[in-house]
Length: 173
Image (cartoon, rainbow, N blue to C red):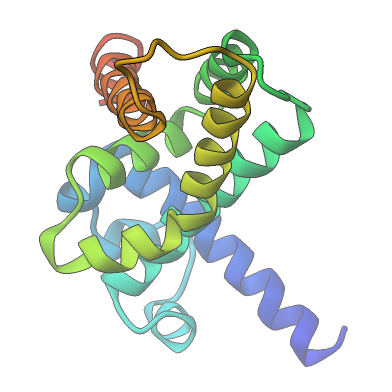
């Protein structure tokens, strides 16, 4: 096995353990020692990830990428109902990713907020494109602007995130 392949396998093993730890305990409750207890030498962890923040950000990135990929593969078009169903199914099947997603979106560690926002860009752009497609397919009332409608969709998304995380992910927290 080549060195690059071995390094990649090591990173995947560390990320798998980290997803479990951050998904079970959140950013604030997670510890690198607990991750290392799953058979990962601490030196190897620090060789691949600078610190807890770097490892957490890698997990957050993985969660956003997985969810965005799932949504894209579902060929949602402008079907908001299908979009919500696919998201809910993703979170129900991926409990650890759900916890990390909602923690990073709703209660990001302050020092990591800007980096999380950067990691979330592709997901946000996917959502904005969906909202654009929906808005382009309907007639808005005269007193509602396109920008107002877009803000409303974003507000609904935030409400969905809060509602879903509090009602449906309680067993993860």
